[in-house]
Image (cartoon, rainbow, N blue to C red):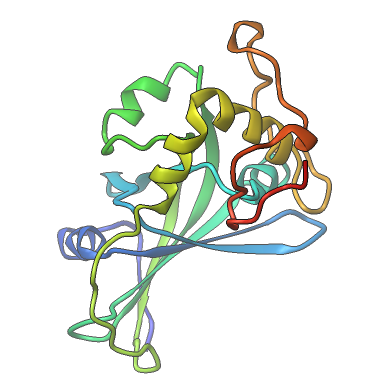
Length: 206
């Protein structure tokens, strides 16, 4: 049976801190619904009704695009060990980009992440727990290091180029709000000039 709360309490906050993965869901008024898994110690509880999570560079940028149209967001956490429980946080969210006034202060809350692209602040208006009887038991091993090694291989200039080329519009063609690259950051490479792997491990033909 579901139980609803107006805000996070100490018990639920501790549950969030114990999780190694969580899921983010957003949708614009039109187009596709997006659900993304997140890990890498990328979420912080800022208060009983506010959390922030850090987003690395990825193949898409759907969350940012959706929030510009419809700022609703749901975060879901599942217990994969111990007592079964599912925790959902509902609310409205907004993106924080590199160069915004809040960027440096929020970024300091997280471990270093090469390729950090944006952060999202969720203002929570409803907290809900429900049974996790259908969620299987898993044993945690470790976080993957591929995102960091990919960003290190490309370098800061290459990561920014990738973001400009792949992350400025969603799969439905919506703008994501990603800031344009500064003029002193160097030229943006075309896709035909990529010499490093894509996020899925493939290489663009030369």
